Amino acid sequence: MDRRVAYQSLTANVLSTEKISSFSARELINFNLYQEFEDNPQKALADLHSGLAAKGDEDRLFALAELSFLHAQNSGDRSYYLAAAVYAYAFVLPGQRGTPPRGIDPRLRWAVDLYNQSLTQAAKSDEGAYAIPMGGKFKLPFGELTVEFNERDLIWSGFRLKDFVPAADLEVRGLRNRYRTPGIGAALAASLEPLENTAGKLSSRIPPRLKIPVTAFLRLEDPRAALASGKLRGELEFYTQDSARTLKIAGVDVPIEYETTSALALTWKGRRFGISRSPVFAPATSPSAAQICEKVCS
Image 1 (cartoon, rainbow, N blue to C red):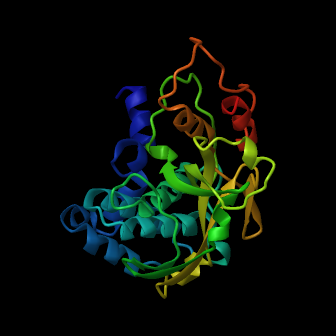
Image 2: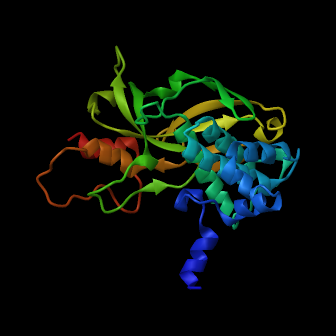
Image 3: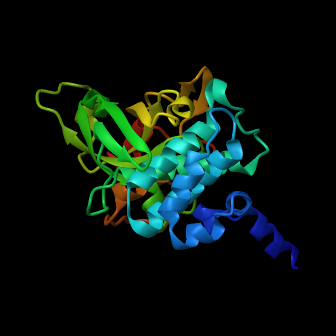
């Protein structure tokens, strides 16, 4: 076998190839559920979940995250996207009920990406164009998730953030580099709606067309323990590069994922410039929203 083909087979996962990884395939085979997942994925996932141990069982957790994402993608049932996010979160941050994956384990990055993309897909509107921030009670295949959400998180420099476009859904053309800060959270590009009676100094300099890099994070309360009862609680939080670059989760500082280039590309979408090449920003840094404003407000 060609070395590259062998490597691709070892590193493939549902996000890169739309086929499950060798790790998840092994779990299905070990529990005699491989064909069951092909024929009846809901039952296979329920069987896999029902055997989840109260502690540990990290291999099964990751498989549940990846398989739930695939089933959500194939069926359109967004409750499985939420389930994938919960499983992935519990795999990466198990608290006292498990061992977090080591940095050298490829499933660590895959699980974070599964969490990020699952959160985005679960929050999409029926039309699929925007992610809709909201709290409330949400159905899970194995229970219920109660989400708290404070709309004040959507206020940014005298504007209300709205029309959240998932960065993962965008293909950027016309810009040589695509700047992304790897981390946790659903990277979005948000439009602005001015608030009434706003007297902020910065808001007077920001044009309505500006799009802001924003990241949504669903903070779950000890999901590894709550998986047994099926009653989960969480809080939906929103961040910009101006407000935070890291999150403290269970005492651990975790980087927040941001997609700067997508927001900038949406800001410039449909606009023509009188120069053939224009540097977007310094290649050594990823700009904040205020720095983006300096480029497009003049």
